[in-house]
Image 1: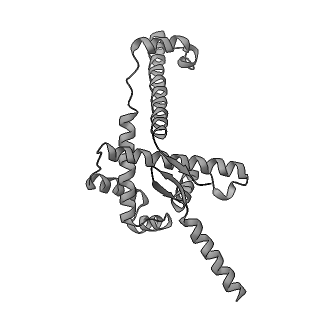
Image 2: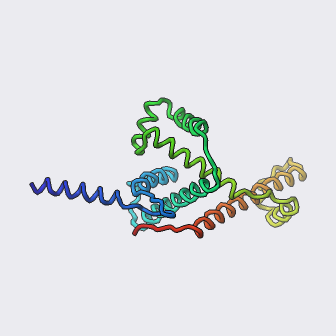
Image 3: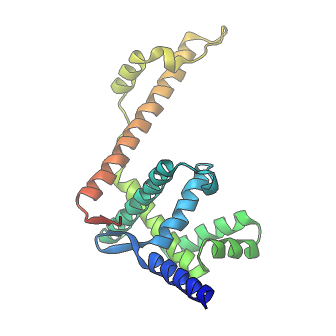
Length: 213
């Protein structure tokens, strides 16, 4: 009887924990199970295993970072809805088809979906949200390419690093051309990173975000 009661209490405690949202974003809940599922993906992307994290401080920091990304994704999805960005069924089907093909067979794909807590309909909905969020993110964080004057100034200030290892038989004009190309790419990447950060900060500043303790 005691064992049965203990098991029942454990089930109830787990159900109660799962019912508590990890966060609310403008009133929209991010479920705890969604966070746990995304946290696993987040660690996989970093080449980490959950069982390998033994430091509680590191675990909390990584989990908070994963939750932060989920909050940003929800804000981007809400912004996409506000702007009327719609992802067609054909776009969803094409993307899901690419993902499924990468697994080699529909059976393996379905099994992996189930392991992640999805059925096909849920995954299609998830994909639609992701594609819409990515589209609005790209629109909001678009930046102008650096001018030739800006590229030249950046190149002059970082010439040694941009030229890299020089071959004895390389022409000075070729070395300079390659260095300018690197300067342009680095400047553009820097601007894009700053723009993306600015978008996230702006959306957060205008949102009501509640995070569970």
